[in-house]
Image 1: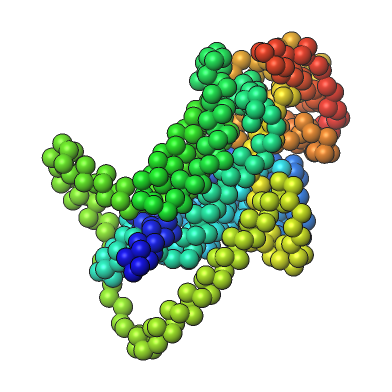
Image 2: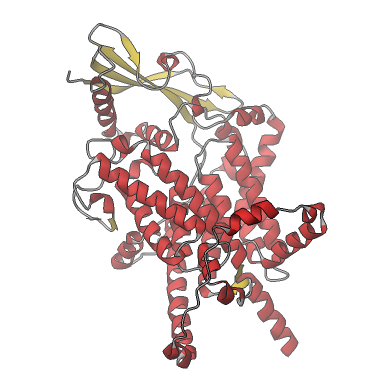
Length: 512
């Protein structure tokens, strides 16, 4: 009986354990994605973050807005201030990459990240939700115990720790990853996903998203249904592999590899921004100790171990900080057990509470009717753990199309204001249309403008374009007005489309 119990405990430890090296790589990957994101947002400060831009939903000069907050509203808006926040975010992201004061850096970066996201909801997508919740859990995990500045400053202390790390917080991160896939599958309730298996056909038919590789894949018609079934059932069942209790590291490693394959496929065939890479980052945090040890053992036996990197090592050693030896705290040593027990209880309660509310929140997004008390709901939104995993769900878009935005100048010329002059074509999709958006923020923003609920932002965009053109001293022929059209092309079954429909999205007069 004792052997059986020991075996059960060992298997459960395998399920909830994480590896400090995996968490180190997770930190580096996470910081890198946020760094790129912050620098990318800098390109669009004037339109998406300054008050006279487009889609600013948070009230001016109020740090609190409903149940959320944003530092961007702490002072009156200006281009310099909004850019400064993004630059601070980029610096903190770099600090996270190198693991400098990791815990403090994670907290500060989380505050900056949700502030930037709360400033403009119109340009957010699923990747923003996921990176936000991953960074939240990272605050409470030892992500700086390997491959970091903190490690080299405390290497004697950190080297005493086993790579296998067990904590209640691990459960929060593990189930957060599972929630992404399970609830994504649950939201795919249409027969297009779960019986007809035509979802990938519709997804790859969206010229707004499809890449050149996706266009090639679309020609392999016999593959599309099996691929759709693979995606649907993988999302629905992969959580079982991640928490399988017997020899957990083997099924978990298989599950991780399948998820990485899934997102590499999505990222190379559909231009959906950083979401696939954020998802890969999330699942890499779960790579088990045995898989890492086996990989390192293989590398040592392979020819790779014969290569010498002495020059690199010599160069790198210049940047390794000296180790510090902190004096022992007698109070902590004397009451170590009591502090450990109280801390474990508090952390366990916190983890289970956040994870349980996340589960209910996701269930309610998929038709559940479990009422969350208002105060708890507002607190959950305040820390921005609210989430909704419904990409291409309940079915992929069938409405596809492109924008034609024309500016009329004083001299009578017609200028294309969205992309290259070919965008003035009313007759057919511009070539490689998915590549013509400035970045993923613009793609999400323009896609949102198609919907009736966001139509009030269309004049804001056109007025912004008026100001940008007429305030540009290099353009002597000023704009008098702008017209905005959407050329709607609906995707039908069997590789057919409806005739193109021209939708008038309004016009504005420009002040010259």
